Image (cartoon, rainbow over all chains, first blue to last red; front, side, top):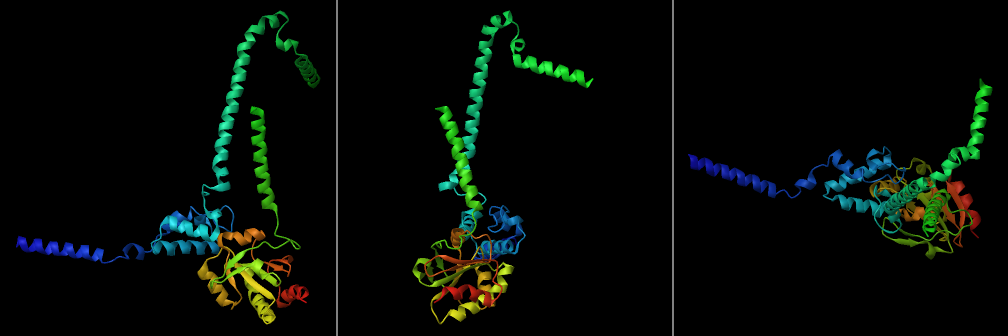
Length: 171
Length: 169
């Protein structure tokens, strides 16, 4: 009895494996879900309406393009193959991320250069301020002898005078 | 040296931005300007190169199957093509702008268009003509210069003929 059951189970298992192997179109034949289509569509931009990703675009043209993605997925195309097809048809501008070649390098290089430039400028600025702060105590005795720097500043004196006059006149 | 580099960098950035802005603000290739050369591979497989067609009047129509305003002029363009067909010196080329092939072919069938049409691969032709949308039609004279620019659809067959007839002997 046990032996019979074992043979039966082995037969069913073998049949199941054969059925799976005998259906080469298993992955290709299945309909891609909206999520699968949108996963690729979100990496592409509508070539007609500016700055709108293909998954979020509501025009008839975008609907057609999503249909193409769906068909290509159903035929077993890979993500890269689909993206290559769109680039060949509509140019690099459909890609959310421009390919790293030629003039496109500016998109990647400019932010890094600006960031490094900014850091260098800040570092230079801080260095100057630190240097000035270190030099200030040495000059302090002469300043103290003649009064504070603010007191020497003709411009500040005039501003303060003006402010006092204004506050008086407003009272 | 640092200052030169800094100002040089800023200047370069402004030049790049300026060039980009200038290019984006440029309108279509205008009347009197030489038409940019291009190569169009039709849906049926033939290749048309503008430079090879010099000496003829060439009508380059940009359209798309998703473009509603392209439809009213579609039959008129075909009628105009048929009108000049026997002369042999007026050539019509349809450039299908950012479209999908099955829908484009269905459009051509619906409007019974028989003159050569092909996709604008990588949008190279539309970029060369700097079109702003569809439909747009460029009529090129025998010397390869833009003789007429039609933004939006032609109103009628007579409208198309009134543009082409003065260019013919």
